[in-house]
Image (cartoon, rainbow over all chains, first blue to last red; front, side, top):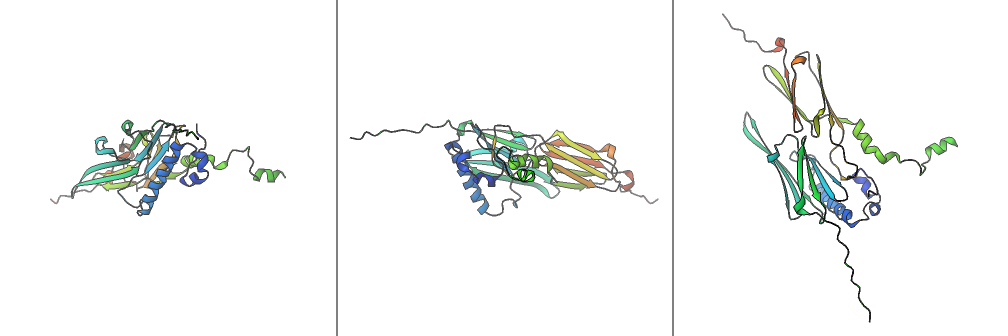
Length: 149
Length: 134
């Protein structure tokens, strides 16, 4: 069930409680904010040539990361998850007159806690990489009743 | 009174901003990143068009212009909610001008993994000519 459709990062502050009344989404949102804050404070990320653009989407069961990586061979793109961090690395070798040059792009993103790490898949089409990350099934809150004597 | 009701937001109206991103995506255009190289016989243009497939690409070449229009093939599925975005849905448009220096009929283009390579053979008149001295 989609409660609110929102489009720009700024609008997410509009009514976070309504958008994320589920703990799943809320955790993810917090992680994205945290990641974005660190990225933004680390300097002008857009100005760096070794960066590529990423988008985040989610639905009930999955989180999706789409990265623009035009002109890479499939085997030159490495997607890794280590200690809750998703790293996308792409390498391109090109032969120029001055010799062989290697361009390496990479980006790391902090993943929310509720991602099932062993079910991650990735596809590359038209220069865009889509990483599909399944969410863990919602954990039921543990209820403990304490008897009052 | 009528004009006031038009201006006042009413709960029954659909919010104007609701689909602004989609609308932007349709109307907005942007110039893609590109590179031009030149050899003795031809010009080579490399255009970066991530998200564009063959069907969404239109190349027009005439006597003094080369126009490349690339529409993105991917559309966000209904169930997906945007969480954070850096890319845009804008259509790529690149217009390059030249002075009647290429042969439009011999333009060759190849699109692969979001990179478009176009070769534009030069007209004979502008090719360098070696003149041997007898």
